[in-house]
Image 1: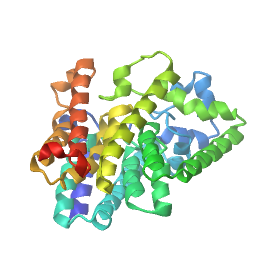
Image 2: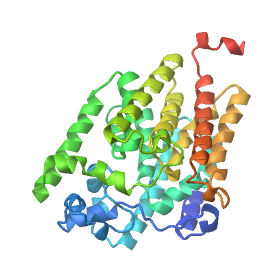
Image 3: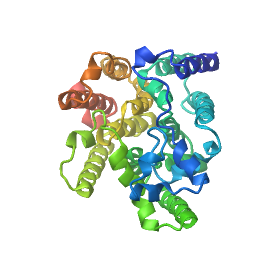
Image 4: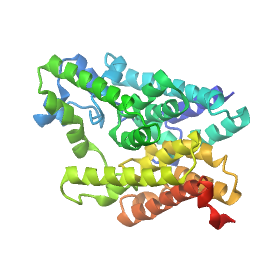
Length: 366
């Protein structure tokens, strides 16, 4: 029954039934089809960037601003027309959502009623619909978070590696792996695999390895839209030095994570929730990335104190259903609006942290 509901809702989204509700259409503008299709045609997208001709060859907004790994992951779409590729991505999207259902049932150990309620809310959320409409890779990133946290060994590493494809998703997970898991091998394997693929790409086009390695970061700087409410977006161009700005964000991220990790009890659902919220709070993300609040909704449902539980759920519902509407769309680019919503999401982080403090830290609840 869930699969029927899933495919029905996704088909309606695909055919623009919810266009007025979500204020966008299913144009698959972010689908990373172009870089892979051009790769097969022996066209070097990174050279095109350095030659200032990239905009002339990329379809819609599917710029190669993720890790080079993304070009290889999307090769299965490369010999298709764009229209056929959107259909293939739609099918993959449904398969991922079915797999996510199985993870919730077998690994997260939710019962059928809980899964159906949670995923029904998720399927009707605006970020989820935006995700499908844009053909965004973030659906793979969401699945990767669950793979990393709820599986072991090979599958956990696959999750870690897939998370690294979108740079803005990766730092907090890396901090978690280094600090909580006290493990560095996943990071080393990821770096090695990425370097191998960059090396292969450079060899294929006889290009400069270092230029190709940093090209996605440079392309991302000039092709990604402003974020929703994160610190990176609120910082804007301050400080003006890009490297210094990223270092400040990384340092803030690891400090905040370390403090939370030290003050709270370990729980997989809680840890996944904290990583999800911090990822959205610190690094640049667009509205569809708020699907990353799904793990937080799952955790919120387990919080014992009702006031904290319902406050957390209410904030998630706000972001999923009320944050974007015909009135607020005029305010989306306002720094004040972004700051207010940054505070609201920070409140969600505080609520989640309070719900799982170590026992010697909760004296004020007595």
